[in-house]
Every structure is written in C-alpha cells, then in structure tokens.
Length: 151
Image (cartoon, rainbow, N blue to C red; front, side):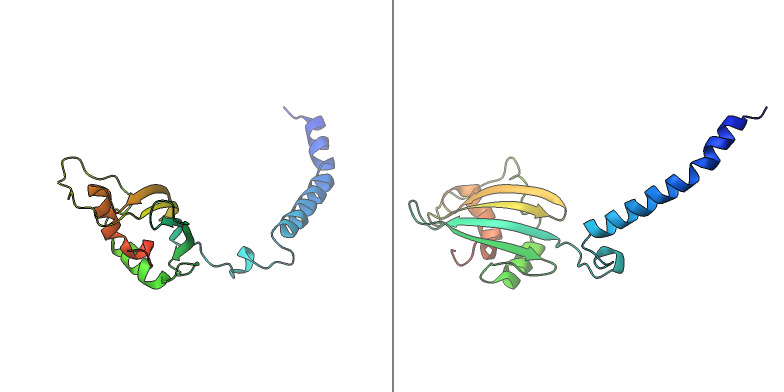
C-alpha cells in the first residue's frame, strides 16, 4: 500500500528543512564566538582538573584573604600555585570526610580557619578547615600549601 500524500509532503518539505538547518548552523557558529574559532578548531584549552576558591581567616576578627587555585594547568591568584598544586595532587582524598574511629590530636596548631569551594577532578567540593580543632587540624596539615601563606 502506498501513501502518495506522505510522499508529496516529504518532497515538498526538503527545501524548508535545508534552509532551517543552514540558519541553525549559522546561529551556532555565532553563539560560539564567531568565525569557527574555539572548540571546533581545537584551540580551546581543556578545563583544569582542580578549580578552587579559597578564603582564609588568619585569626578571629582578622580580614579574610581570598584567592583562586587552578591545577593541571597550574594558575589562579594563589601566592604559590605550583606548591599548592603539588601538595593537593599528592593528597589522598583531601576533601573527603574524616574516617570514623580515627584518633585526632587535641593540640591546636593555630587560630586560622579556611573555607574551600570548587571542583576537584570533576566533583563539586566544599569544606571548612581549622587549625584549632583536632581532626580538622590534620586535614589542614595535609593541605597546608593550599592555605598558604597562613600556616
């Protein structure tokens, strides 16, 4: 059984479909930044493996210090991004929870506190660290260069 009406509709819709696809292509190139540059030509850098916003308060009432940190490739406004990235990339699960049952030191290393937000190997991370509370102080020691120059 043949459907002549469908055949005629399909044949007559080719020109408008081709025109619509051409317009969509032009709009896509314009939205990407113009004349074929960027991702289509392979010149866009890959996203960093680590992208963090770090806010450190050296002591209660002190003005917070803020910087960004990018790793692989290294960059950002961090005072020593290369050292921070080396330490961060070597750390084992730096933003994971502190395991249950672990013994934490009860010695305060200082009054500084820090908050970190961003992405770590594609995963959203957010954490608060302190030099003055046992287990959090252990994490601070593990990530000390990320919170530099406040140690």
